[in-house]
Amino acid sequence: MAKFTYHMQNILDIKCKLETQAKSAFAQANMRLRREEDRLQTLKSRKMIYEIKAKTLMKDRLNVPEIKRNRQAIDTMERAILMQVKVLASAQKEVDEARNRLKEIMIDRKTHEKLKEKEFEEFLFELGQEENKQVDELVSYQFHAKPNES
Image (cartoon, rainbow, N blue to C red):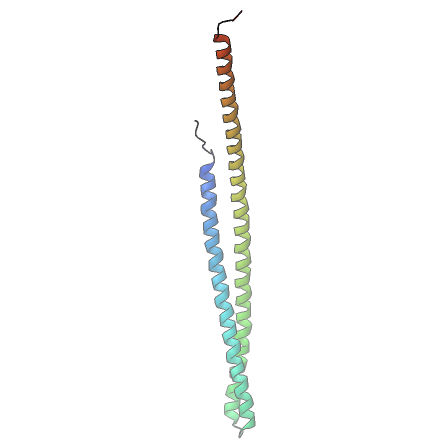
């Protein structure tokens, strides 16, 4: 029996490797996004702590230098939060780009797999045709090889 070999198997193998790399890049981008989200949440929590402290400072005996330091800390947290939001947006953009690259590579790989399947089906059809031809030749040979019974 003939053996099936896909003539573009090396290309399919490369497509699979590219897909693995794209999956890895997507996972790394996703991890970075999660880290940046955690940082943003930490900054928001710190700001909230400073705001609670500001309320406490206003209720107690007024300590103007402490109130000023607290207000500066809140302002610093607000700036840090704004910067972190930009970093987070950048990380989200990277995730989206990595997802799109992965999607394109997966489509390309699946296309090559479909081509391989079609080529295999063609191979099986041709193999079946060849077997039918051999059976027909065998039957024809046996028919003509029998002595005529008249």
